[in-house]
Amino acid sequence: SILESDNDDLFEDFSIEKVAKNCIGDKVSGKNSKNEKACLKETSLWKKRFEAEKASNLANMTRIQESTGSIKVMCRIRPPVFMEIKSASPLVVEATSSTDIKAFDKLKNVNRSIKVERVFSSQNGQNEVFKEVEHLATSIVEGYSAGIICYGQTGSGKTYTMVGDGGKKIADQ
Image: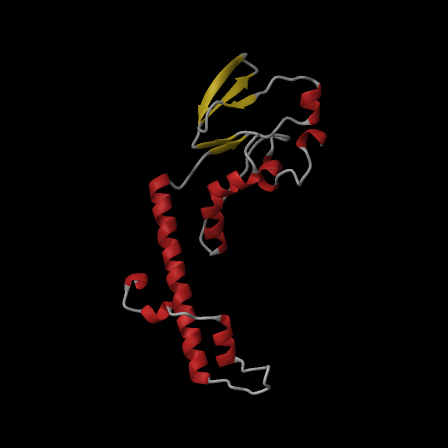
């Protein structure tokens, strides 16, 4: 890989100041000390460094997908809303572990156990949810195909999962 090659000059100490001085000039003194060859070399090395990092990220993403699978099912349980608290309704969905949920089947009047890759209870914050999907978000920004889908009925917490509570207490909404 390019990271393990003898291209040590790719990772020598580059700085924004060095690139700016070589490519733009020294604006403080008013001199234009632009060195076109040095600028092209710096630009080329930065481009190689970027491509090496991009290749490394792709390799890491591939390893993650190979080890964990390309589809993950996760469940986030939102906190009860004001009306649910006021009516003292029983919880329909509860986290029983980090990979199991208990869901109440109203038609059959029984609790069902469902196993998923990860469960986020109402006590888990946005940061914990994001850490679990951060590699997907990063790969999307880098131009790779990936998706994060929130699914559920109206009022089940899709928006809460994607954007959080906006600093408000969910019980006050």
